[in-house]
Length: 337
Ligand SMILES: Nc1nc2c(ncn2[C@@H]2O[C@H](COP(=O)(O)OP(=O)(O)OP(=O)(O)O)[C@@H](O)[C@H]2O)c(=O)[nH]1
Image (cartoon, rainbow, N blue to C red):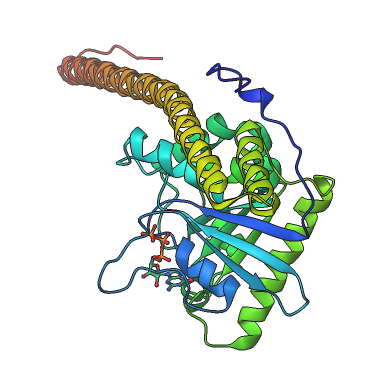
């Protein structure tokens, strides 16, 4: 494995075979509506979307669909990979699994947000982890999906109104993604609304694909997954005897297990560094906030003291004026100019 060094983020390159299938992966926090959006794209309830039973996506899963225009899509749903409670061991294995599902590379990364949930520091951290693991280039493949279009509509709000009030981090994310965004109403029963949002998504995906010269996002992990696929094809078509096939399969399984172990370790190491950096940043932001609060409190106390002194001076001056008036009233012919 080439760049297994944890800091070699930029060695993740853009290459990949053109297979005629567009592969999209849904990422984002648990509960933002990844599975529901996946189902809207597929036009069927293939992914388990959280219902009253509270079921959450446990592992990455791929589904295929042929769209009305004949376009072939692979859609990968993922669990909340970058949620703060996820442990690195699970994340490492899930990312490797996800890459394995997308052997031919990814054409689009759908970063799913919900207008019903605030864009939080955790969300910003998730995005940072994604960039740390896959390099800045991942942003060139990203389209931001906002779910909850129905709720905006109920409040007579547009996506632009919502974004106008949104935190700077979200505005920055959109800027980095060249403002590629789509509003989804996964609850709609209107075929026209559903068709409109899917068409808009496909338009954004076409832009991404064109801007990346038709190449999917890929890296060394994808290459290794691709090689395994090719070896499997060789075995299937090599005219081997049953025993030879069994032997080759066993060899491949062992090699795969070893690779998986190495890849998981690498992902975990990258993630550990990301988490450390984030914790450092959050703690320095926290202490900067505390210092600012302390300064504001001191300034408030100081200005309170100044006001008190001014009030004292004013009172003294009033008393002196009063005394002077009394003296004048006592028969003196003094004239004050
Ligand atoms: N009103 C409304 N609710 C939505 C929309 N999209 C998703 N939801 C709801 O949001 C909740 C979470 O949706 P999921 O699709 O399970 O979210 P997820 O991101 O896949 O979550 P996990 O499977 O837990 O990782 C469900 O109750 C959905 O019905 C939408 O456009 N409008």
